[in-house]
Image (cartoon, rainbow, N blue to C red; front, side):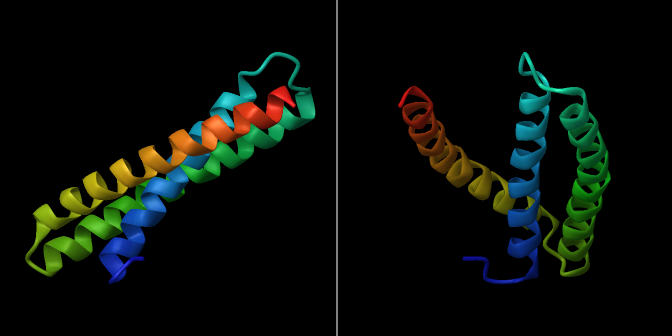
Length: 99
């Protein structure tokens, strides 16, 4: 659980980075219809600027607090946790797709 605003913003960066990756993956699947591609393109554009803004705000707050290095350490920790969780998700998703 995030303990402060920096951790909450870092968690948002990690979650939204994964969401953006999923949108791109979905858009690249064969047979994705035109309407879905348009939606994925629109949400990807929106997610891109939002993601950049959230990370910049997190780094700004860390700088104001006099701990700019903390932004990188939080992101590193949350990226590793997300990578582990996502690996489990992908395995579970693959099982469901085979069923």
